[in-house]
Amino acid sequence: MDDRCLILFQNVHIVIKSEQLIRSKGFEYQIIPVPSNISSECGMCIEISTINSSEVCLLLDLKQINYHLYTK
Amino acid sequence: MRVIDCKGLICPMPLIETKKVIRESKIGDELLVEVDNETSFNNLSHFLNDNGLTFEHSKEGIIYRIKFIVKELQIKPQENKVDSKPLANHGNYIIVFSSNSMGSGDDDLGKLLMKGYINTIDQLETLPQEIICYNSGVTLATKGSDSGKSLKRIEGLGVKISVCGTCVDFFGLKDNLEVGTITNMLYIAGKLAGDSRIVKP
Image 1 (cartoon, rainbow over the protein chains, first blue to last red):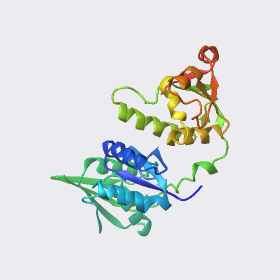
Image 2 (cartoon, helix red, strand yellow):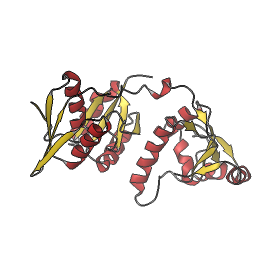
Image 3 (cartoon, chains in turn cyan, purple):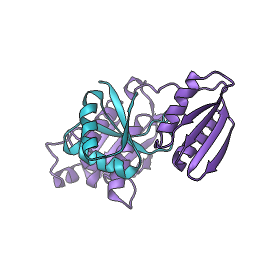
Image 4 (spheres, each protein chain N blue to C red):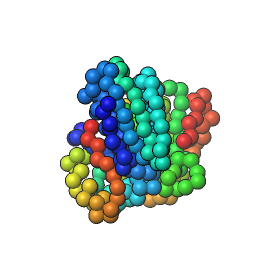
């Protein structure tokens, strides 16, 4: 499997919005619970391939979505 | 005393920052973390409690301050990728996806939760024997979809994936399934009436 990274968001509403955005542009992604080594209570995040991270970040930036990129 | 200024950072970044500083610190060092939201504060306090670190905290306006002394703790190592995990045991239970949404209330939220749930199954100590999908649950197995790929991975761990033929037909997915064996109502009814526990998220 290729290198993956996580995109973390402020709340679940932004996760849902961002998922729709990422899906609409055809990027491969997975919704996963925020791993317990990062947090046990911060809900869901989006896992993408590191190769796509700059493009996906640009997409989120354009929509002025606040997020944090977490590289494993 | 070292101050870790996490004001303006959203959860879980303050915890990530704090863990980083703890790793760089020596036993006996005194640290003060400042955060400006309750979620991050709760997150940090649970982490400290779980790791046996006693702390003092105060709140001033929206700023929470957490003070503690570094001692030996076990920060759990990064978890390995799921695909490097050995095959888990199979429990005597069947997961039924009767829709593509987990729980009821908000559909968007339910769909998101369902994806998170599916991506957690392969981390369970005991895997299900089988996953049965019907009604909009079959759409989770759609070719090229994120959930379809996840289900494919779970199938690779030895979990049988069965989908309702009538439902596949209804949603027009016959030639568009990533994973799953098409079954009929007799099969599904038999499974639901069998000895296995039924888990319906």
